[in-house]
Image (cartoon, rainbow, N blue to C red; front, side, top):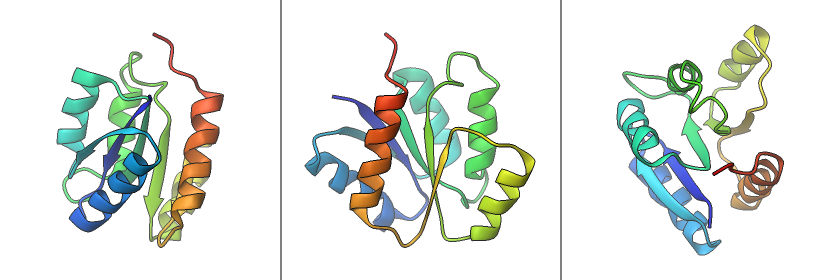
Length: 126
């Protein structure tokens, strides 16, 4: 089963997303900040990452930029969660990526549909 890393500085969101994914049959891991998430990615290499945009210390976009600087991790798809539509517009204005943006609050059914689409589009190469 695919492993999904959930990165969010809000413990309630982190727990809720992880629990919903577990109920849907996914293996999950969680990180409350970018540096902890980077350590997990380097050690475990998840199949997909769900990441909050606005986090203290390292934003979701800075986390993505760090991953993209390493060819081993650049291909991991990221689904961004955000309550700030300006952040989405700013990122899309600078660069178009294959990543998905989901605005908070969101439905888990929409999140699961996006995850399934990404995993089908970008199957993990072992």
